[in-house]
Length: 173
Image (cartoon, rainbow, N blue to C red; front, side, top):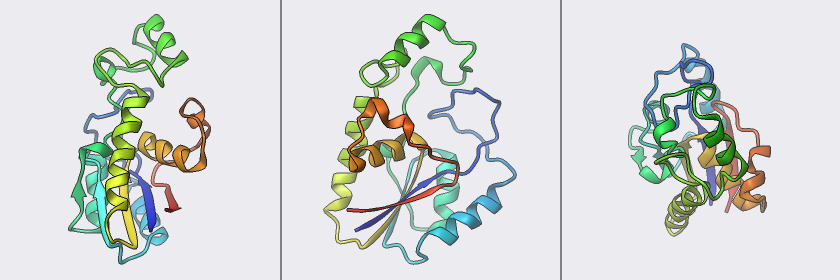
């Protein structure tokens, strides 16, 4: 099966905003970015899945009107930090979390291990389906987890994977 991991296009946000699960508007570059995504994926995907986030759904609808939302495809839950900026959250809490983001969660958020479990469980379900080509419109964190899994990169090292807005990765599983 070919799985096309598609990151949402550029959101219209203030620099440094922690917007994990927040619904945020899209930048004016959406049409151009969408056209580039459509050029990089097959026109006849068997199924398209999307994070419930607005920024993913808009792109998923352009790929297939029959896309399916799945909560497993949400970005990391940043809990109490959502809507704040990186320079305004408690420095000690942030430093502690950044030292072990795999096992520690932002206040009232989730750990990277918890996120990995939900993402890989979703992927296992998809692999049981008789699809040839699947599109998944989601977030950088979700894509990073899937790529790290298949490339055998430890979660703690997964931020070495650069995932741009509107970028497409093809994984054969």
